[in-house]
Image (tube, rainbow, N blue to C red; front, side, top):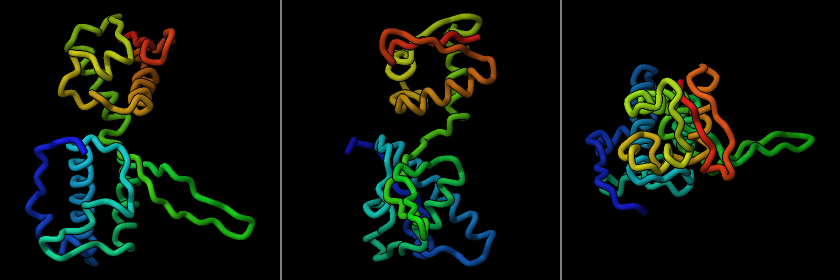
Length: 187
């Protein structure tokens, strides 16, 4: 695991946090906190996939508390619905039933729309607006992207953010000799 300065927030040490609350308004706030915790943790450690049965967030050994499988499902469904997660394993179907036993969730540190906004803002600040060109590699690993939300993002997610910009008419993507040499022209 990558070294990080991640610190658990205070609410992580609050015992009721580990039981999904029955009052709707309280539950919505609780799910928001879980979503933020999952995103902050996975971003800090640069973890791109949450393994549902092996996520250290579900258990607080200092409190002696852990989420049960039903509560984990509620939290994961909320994460997916928020657009910050996607199941990597597919739902299986047979002729008599469909089952959805998901075990792996791809964490979207930023949604494609958020990445698109971040990328476009970066392009404008760094002089790429108005016809400037850069490569996918430069967006992913270039010197000018240090500290940006898309630095080190997985290439497929980065491309989805670029597709949002392309759809908005803010860039055009063109193919290079390799995928990392694919170019982006910003407008």
